[in-house]
Image (cartoon, rainbow, N blue to C red; front, side, top):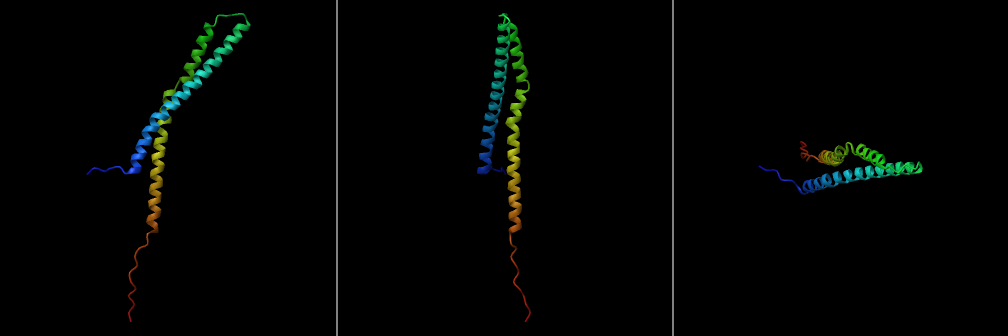
Length: 121
């Protein structure tokens, strides 16, 4: 017998897939943006320093700024994957803990039907 997902579980599956794709891509884009800004800042600082010294060979600046970009991007894929997966796992775990706790509390509220008093006359 196949067990079908209820409406909330289906919504959770759709939200999980959307988060996995969107969250992972957002984190990767964020890391890329930060690395690009650091690379540009280092390049600009290096070129300004060289220009003040009347040295207009900016090739070393370009190489150093790309090294900075590479260092900033190390582990970015792993971080994006963790950002995409961990909230899904924690979200499902939290949802089932809340569901289990709610059912446990409601089971405790059920009143057992009392047997009618059988008093002897």
